[in-house]
Structures are given as C-alpha cells and as structure tokens.
Length: 164
Image (cartoon, rainbow, N blue to C red; front, side, top):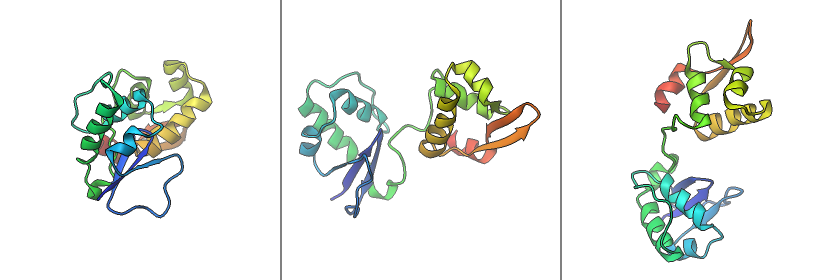
C-alpha cells in the first residue's frame, strides 16, 4: 500500500513509509486521514487542482466528497514517479511568476531591477522567488552572470528545454 506525502501543493507517492517525514509535510494512508486532517477546504481544492489530468474545480460539495476524490486522485500517482510533482509543469503566463520566467528566458536575461520594475515586488522577494520557486520547486537552472548593466539572471537553455 502506497503512502502519500503532501508538502505544499506537491503530492508524492512512496512504496514504503519514509523513516522520517519531511518537515512541514503530512503523511496520508487513507481517505479517512484526508478527511480528518487539518487541511482547510480551500487547501483540499488546491491539492485537487494540482493533480495531473483533473478538471479544475472551485469547491467541493463537502469534506467527505473532497477526501474521497482526493484519495482516488492520489492513487493515480505511482510510487515509481515519486520524484515527480503533482503540480502541473506549465506555469500560467498571466501570473507574475510566468512573467519573470519569460523575462529570464530572453536571450540577455534580466536584472533584479528589471524584474522589480515589471512585478513591483521588492528586491528580496525577487531573489527569494528565484531561489525558492524557480530553482527548488520548478527545478529550473537559473544562472547568474556579471554584465555591464549589473548582475544578470537567465534560465539556461538545457533547463528551458526540460520545463517547456
């Protein structure tokens, strides 16, 4: 029986229970555990919408229905694909994250100031998004180079091909 670990919007399947659950994660073994978990209904909806091949929804009828449907969706994730995220790989272009990715895919990349101007984020938010969301969560290879206009960030070609 597979064990499913929920961490953020990511659901991974494991054939055996890990010795230690990752910090901030929730281990699920049944639909009842989903129903009795501390997850809010909006979080259950976002987990459902992050599963591959499902029709996005805005809400569940009730918590019991949510638990039953999520459990069925989790079982479609095979333990052999435990390294893959349940999050869709395509980033919506209409989001600020999508705008940043498009800027970083340009031939000459983008500076922190370019991204701040486009998103109206603070500099530390941009750096955190590059390190956390792009590098760690999406697995993109963001490279940094010094140029005459300052430090320039861009997504390397090999990483861009994998994410597309």
